[in-house]
Length: 197
Image 1 (cartoon, helix red, strand yellow):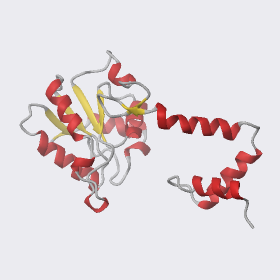
Image 2 (cartoon, rainbow, N blue to C red; image 1 turned 30 degrees about the horizontal axis):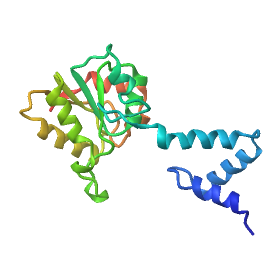
Image 3 (cartoon, rainbow, N blue to C red; image 1 turned 180 degrees about the vertical axis):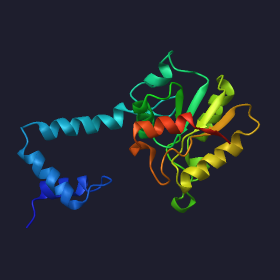
Image 4 (cartoon, rainbow, N blue to C red; image 1 turned 45 degrees about the horizontal axis):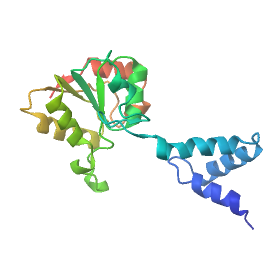
């Protein structure tokens, strides 16, 4: 015999990536043993994501402003844009402290098996930025896997003849590694050793 609120909480937490039913159950019981208000505080923080977070008008990263703090900063190198697959990749590069330019977030990679083509990615805003801003170099920092390589190749071909230097981060990262999980030193090396495409 189940307990409806507990069962529902377990079911909802199980929907999160990397959270199975056992982990979800442990989390629910942890919340039940936590000080009064803990679950409500966590719930409010999660609810605030839906109405309080949007895509930056410039780089498509997640922010609570019209422009994210990186795009709004005058202290960044304006002529270099690092193209990444996911918002968490921006955080990884920022932790490495090896890049002082700006970013562009695609929100995925080309993956025909998953039904993701160029139209599903934030490529059009990237092209608009290149046309309107004084961008000299586009660094393709997609994941070093099949989908990331396909996306980088597609973008390199698309940007040929546009008048910008197109580079790809070096293979300082192991093949199959997702950028968000890479260590800061490897990310810095990959940026320093980028190659012309």
